[in-house]
Length: 120
Image 1 (tube, one colour):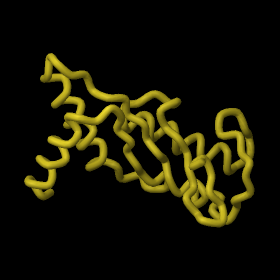
Image 2 (cartoon, helix red, strand yellow):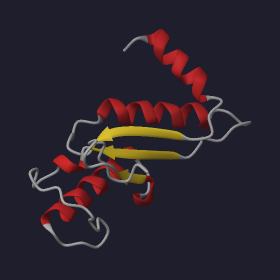
Image 3 (cartoon, one colour):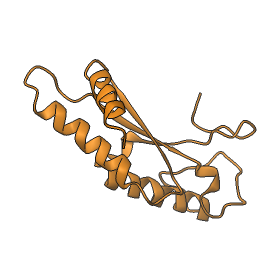
Image 4 (cartoon, helix red, strand yellow):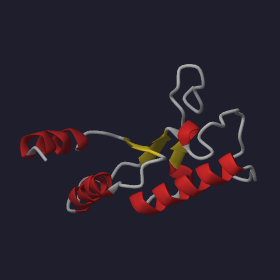
């Protein structure tokens, strides 16, 4: 909500080649994050010299997606049929929809020191 901080962010984004948005897979409230990405896209669409850089989304906390007590990788989040795989796939689908990116641009990750996943 700090306008000076927002302006500094948008000034910096003008020179980047990639945007990595980070959101929790277990958090459904993403309105402010989506608004920020929309504003980024809008700013680039108004510039004839520059196109919007690719946007990747790191979906964190997948280890906590239901069933929350289950975390035993490896998982197949594309085609797997366990409850954990299905829940993470649903979260990734929702994030892709909310952030208006393709499914292959959403990367499910776990940052738990003892159970890192997809962060190598």
